[in-house]
Image (cartoon, rainbow, N blue to C red; front, side, top):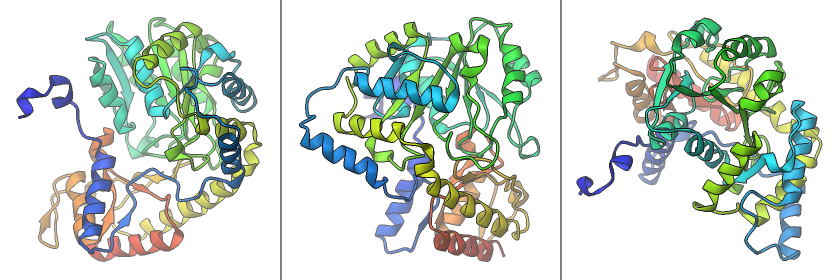
Length: 395
């Protein structure tokens, strides 16, 4: 009956991260001992001070529809956060709160893109960027990078990818899936290219900003002549361990924020009222209150890099942020392991799932066909056991 579905949904790829997680759950239900390293979800509990704020909101009877673009008090808190952490000045009318950063990004794409517009995706990129471009009837164009360049594109590559149809570019630092962090100097060099093309807009996805291990986060909108063309996307899912609370937000030129509010008003209306009240408390708290999670992620990063470094043919860079490693596994392409021939990263990821009982995600979904993504948002014990299993399978 697929012919009765719209072309829009038939042409839309399934999220590979969610597909692998579903496959892992299916095997678990069959009794297999699967270690899941596929989902980008912190394994910490939401901090108590945030949960207490949610309980207080319930007791204060916050139970009505919220404003489409978010409570005024939350938008004011987001403005304070942008000033404190990112050196960007926004006013509340430039802020739109959504049901997760994914909706924030989808809103922006829907209000800016027309059929035939081109969207530049420095690769590797989060899987949903390309899908959201497809839903907006735009064309996405990958700008490739490799582990040798620390998964960073150059200004020359950016310049070469721009055409008269280019409307939007995505930057994501710290990056999902590679953990790469762009420095201020590197972003300013890319901005120099974009200065020449005033009709190109920038989505700067900074959802992992607080999870970094050395290179401080630098916001693209903090570049003076990029402010009026940049939409800064953020949320509380990753740094505050609030994935299921579903709160994301943008800071943007006011006319874009107004358009996103109009779009959201016909899709979901305002985000969850209790989660919004809790987010005010989360964002107003000093960043030091969540540092314990970042410190633990760094320990896990060092652990998994050390363990992977002992396996022949797995090449890694030193991720400076987020909670992923993105090893190049192309050494194994063309080889047969335990009766399974490996021709791609997808084959390699399936080998690990079926033979090692470890769930990862193919890099093909992220625009990097030589790699796989491994999340270390898991206990040290599980990381050690998972890499041991992988090592045993690869022999």
